Length: 115
Length: 109
Image 1 (cartoon, each protein chain N blue to C red):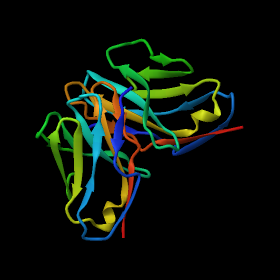
Image 2 (cartoon, rainbow over the protein chains, first blue to last red):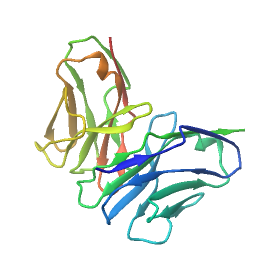
Image 3 (cartoon, chains in turn yellow, blue):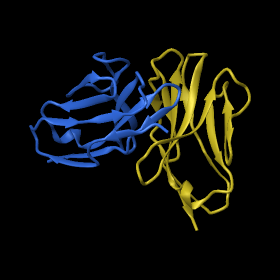
Image 4 (cartoon, helix red, strand yellow):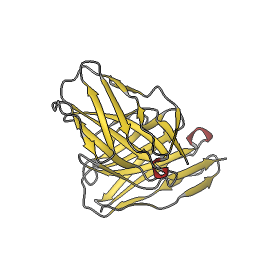
């Protein structure tokens, strides 16, 4: 069975700093997808970034980028120039191909951006 | 953008009550999901549906049932609520990208 581990329950950084959230996963699958979702205090879960396992290039979305290390089964999220609005719970999730879009979720990391 | 509406933001029920959590999406997606979110445990899948009247058990279906009579509506039912079902419930829809509702915080007293 697949598992997703987020080892940092909580992190805090100053505004404008760069922060990296870690995620590791365990799977025997070769084709899969990885996601980072953000849940702000409003509780609305929002997709931040998505990575296909077959792609070697790391995904980026504006200030958000990932470091995908397939052999190490690691999928960290880097937030550059952090903003107060980045304060949220961040969840890492795994989905194997042809799984009816069922995701396996990590426990989450609470990120606090301090002014 | 896709809108996913959950009928209640907060709900307080008594042990043994039958509880209905409603979810409506406006994008005609086949897939709909019910998750439970607990601190330190992330999201756990209760049930999902990939078509009208179709349902599949997720990881923690015990104590829950679902109904999908129309494509846009997916209901989660707690037949006899218990205190260990106090939790945040999230509905989602989508394919490669999931869209979520704002969640229902359910307290069972």
